[in-house]
Image 1 (tube, rainbow, N blue to C red):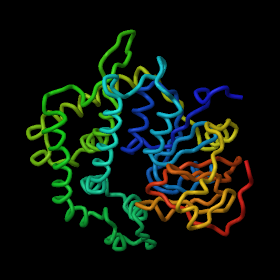
Image 2: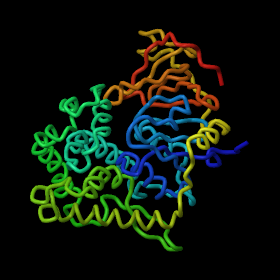
Image 3: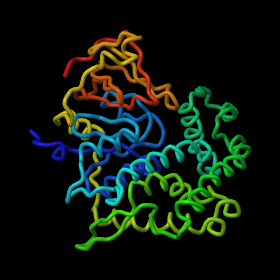
Length: 363
């Protein structure tokens, strides 16, 4: 049995092109936290995730031991809590003013996420040539296209005609955020928005912080998709500091990834068995009886509930037994192919309701 959280296996379910997954992978890499990966298709179905008894469709998911965490905001918060800074796992906050870095990272993430849907409309036609991808992403925002005919895709947000129409406004939205970075946080020509000390090859170097990760991930993604950004609107001539920073970050992470070594890739059943046979990363929490929603709705520990995100991906609802509910998260128990796991989601952006489904077996 594991003696500490740090002894438990971490498995990240992701696909390489996911910009959200990149945030988690970069974080783990910079902090030298070992992990395995279970690579997923970029569209549904995902039987590897279903093997955990999970219907949630967004990528990434991450397990620590027998606890599975949804949503990158919660994933990174949990890694911060469960892997405190140490010689083995350096902090990604500046030692000069870590609290200021924490606040700035959260604000930058919020601002970047607010423009994500606009940024997705910058995907070039070559990326959107697969009808299965267009149909899948329509379902992600709640539009079910059941017909297989090409004409049926006309209502999809990422249908070529709709993308072409939305592109000018999407460029304007993206340009505003990039201009903010160019004219404020990077205006003095600094290497990183907030640098941290990271060891490399026996020497200490300055590297990007979590603040940089939360600011760069979306623009790094678009910069690496040919045709996504129109150079005459969003390019190196107009925003030299931002693009130099993106390329500097890319080169730094490639070097750190090389230092970390090859990440072990697990098959779906292999990952699920590893997770289910592990210990829990956290002690079992409780349902807060004083929580306003608990009081109003009458939620109780052990009840059957449904859990889903409220912004997008809400057509896929998870069913399980309510384990915990507090100010920051929901925890439910789901039953999968090899046993049960505890699934954690944030409170913000997620919702639960009572379900009449069969009671999940208790852990």
